[in-house]
Amino acid sequence: MGEDMSGKRPVTARVKLTICTEERFFGPGVCELLERIRETGSIQAAAARMEMSYTKAWKILNRAEEEIGTALITRMTGGKNGGSSTLTEAGETAVRDFREIEGELSSYAGRLMETHYRAFMPEERK
Image 1 (tube, helix red, strand yellow):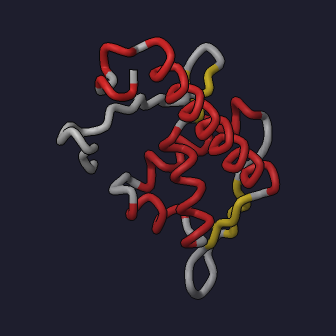
Image 2 (spheres, rainbow, N blue to C red):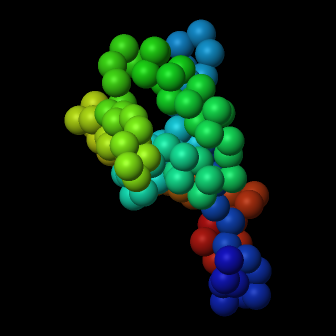
């Protein structure tokens, strides 16, 4: 992070969004995994980019799909060059909606910081 004019680092709030039923099933990690599957066309490649095991990626995806009640990715197995995966319409919607909620929460958290947490703000912003 850069520094403001007084030489102090800017203060921000970070909010981590997790979607839950009785347990967590969709958060930043699941969203990133889906985004990487979109980029790579592969669960295995997406998991590798995240330094996650293929088995763990499958478990995460299966849990999210079970809780949401619909497929988030379309899996095509085997073939000469191996299988491939693409996001379903529900998967694309889940990623888009999650990122939008996350962005709005971050914006709201910033406004709350300016309104309620003056102790953390530089004197010139109070």
